Image (cartoon, rainbow, N blue to C red; front, side):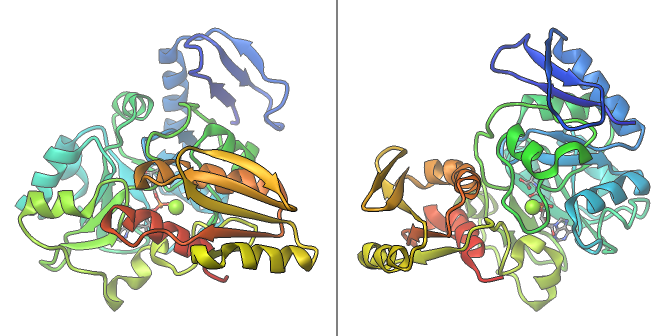
Length: 354
Ligand code: TXA
Ligand code: MG
């Protein structure tokens, strides 16, 4: 079955969908209530199909977490190695016990305080959780996303939705429905459009395995908030965590165009060198508000020098620059203060040589 459907929340009633399984072109504006779209998404999930949906962090590519065949489709569509575990999205913290076992008090504390929100907890899996979801591991990642469409979908589905970011493996995560469509196209059963993601960077991942509380991935929820809530410092990932999270691979979240991070004092010289070789260069700099201009043969994009706002716009900017066919991107090196932890993590992986 293939039903391609888009919901535009620019206007509540303007919705487009296309029942042919060809590309998402010639979309017809229709008026369908939100409930009907959620019901269609639920029907697709129950039929073992995939549904891309918005969250507050990035768009997810969802499938029924209890259906190994449906999970298989996620790996195929993403081109992701099957031993990389998926996050299971649930409607609220009370569902934790359906999926996880031996849940420590501190994990409950975080779940109750920060869900719905940009936090993923890694816990021992319940024995009935399919190994396809956990990449063959004895642990499971769980999160309650903070987005009305995601929550409506999860409540109506009444089960767990396994969902990695809705992009090809290693590429930049999508922060709009258009990014999903551009990256995955007609391979996805349905795309629910909830507008641009509020945070724009993935969730923070905290692991509660082997009596240790470890930060596997910095993200939308700050490390300080977590440590303050738990009254303890989190550990750093070691060799045993390395293969567990593809988001921890040195090269990940990458634009197609090569990207280098350059200290501010060398930016102009580097840009000149590259453009004198005939290369088409774009620079991403820090400034007050987002703007872009073209001068001396080089495009400059200014992103806000507030970490949250920069993070919110980073992926969308990289997607846009990828479309504009530059030969090389240069990003001004960012401050190394704690507010910039998640942004620095993503941009350094994006810049890492593949
Ligand atoms: O914000 C997010 O977390 C988004 C939205 C869609 O929820 N999802 C997301 O999923 O970023 P994904 O698959 O692109 O990244 C999830 C990360 C991966 O690096 C994965 O390896 C790690 O979480 N992960 C999932 N389950 C795990 C587990 N059991 N143990 C260790 N890492 C796990
Ligand atoms: Mg991802």
